Amino acid sequence: MPFFISKLKEEGRLNQTHFTIVNVGSRKITSQDDYAEGGWGVLAPNLTIYGFDADADACDAANADLEARQINWVEKHIPLALGETVGEATLYVTQDPMCSSLYQPNEPYAARFSGLSELMNESFSIEVDITTLDQVCQTEGIHEIDFLQVDVQGADLQVLKGASQTLDRTILAVQIEVEFSHLYRHQPLFADVDTFLRGRSSLYLILVLPIVYGPIAHSIIPTIGTTALGRRYLFPRFHPRRIQFPIENPRANFETGLYRRHPGIS
Image (tube, rainbow, N blue to C red; front, top):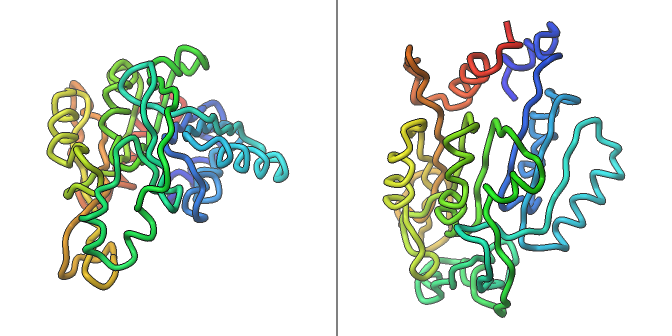
């Protein structure tokens, strides 16, 4: 978390303010996937993190790690697949489980890029129960979300559609993975996600960070290759007086949003 929030914490201005984060697709692969260790921990103990992942083993591992660390914030990982509706769906489990998706991997397309097939090729498929974020918020008693991250390998739009009430009611900022090419068969692409979110009057686009796949490797630095996926950051439109955010600095934008959203910050 950048200096602005740390300074407010140091001065005691966040003592009466609670922050809630929801992470859909919460498998912890690297240290960057540990939200509290990545900077959000500065908000503890007034911090709650809910993680959702279809992989029960990944959730169990995350919860066991949190218990061993004796954390001073609330965080739990719940083994649920989130989507657009409540029911059943096919989960395509890939050779590396982090690439598993509700959409079938596009193996001929993945074969065009070095090392991608070893991660994305389908291992097997299973039927799983799915629910919506709106439904989970009711069940878990989640009344307000400050920050939502969605990274579910092509099914991100399904999660957003299943969170329509939550998006309209509480969310301050959204970070979502978007694809520009069909890494998974019949998946929505950036334009589909963009159209859906532009239809929600409370959110607008800040930044897309492309990840480019080439014939040799992949990088977040634009280079010769195919732009396959990226990150989309969204922040609220503040009314009646709209803030003009610097588009090149989404973190600073979020800090400004936090400052205006929570009356306990002064």
